Length: 179
Image 1 (tube, rainbow, N blue to C red):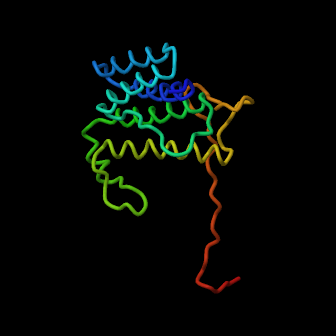
Image 2 (image 1 turned 60 degrees about the vertical axis):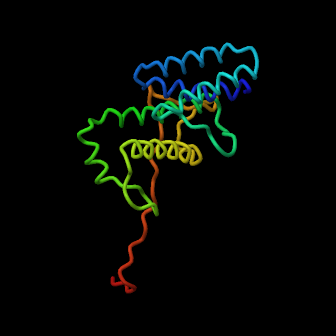
Image 3 (image 1 turned 60 degrees about the horizontal axis):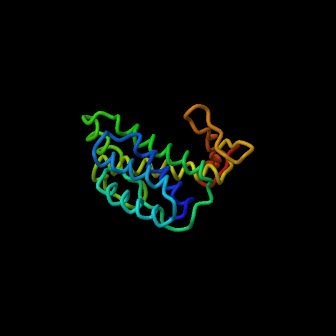
């Protein structure tokens, strides 16, 4: 695994790991990350990454490999994005379990999917994805505060995004105008 890919993937796993309860599997993932950071070549990094994916796949919320085109975000931007996503997931994890059923009853998937979320984890994953998409779209729209170096301009732990302004549609009064 090339060093740049390692850094990007490892940063996503580290951001995820910050919000996990200590366990033997988490310790094994973190040790493999440390070994991969110190690996002398791409082949060793690939070996450690295979171990990380194998162990992590058994754990809830483990970051999935990206599919499709390579990201045009810098490593720092990728890390901030992963951190924000994990912060959203962590925020949902703080909701007491006695409220999960209520939320699953009144918050439903948007669009043509219909139905309801199968579990609270699915609901959380949906909001995590919405946060990701909102940040990416905000970047495309030029609404994310950036530094001169092209990195996210953060205020503390918060990403600074200007709100989206929606154009107001002209109201129709049934075809006739009265003045």
